[in-house]
Image (cartoon, rainbow, N blue to C red; front, side, top):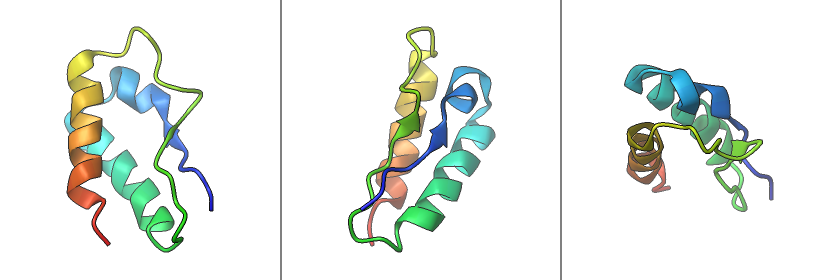
Length: 66
């Protein structure tokens, strides 16, 4: 298995388009591995806008099906 490496800086200050592109980038790599875990490198900073974190999760759930 391996753990995804979404860039927390995009969650912190990126647009919805940036967030979706980052999640897609990670999922395009990870979905090929049966033990893939989607994750944010360096964890999600405390000052990340809640809306960005929720959107990140929404896009992940949309793309998570194999």
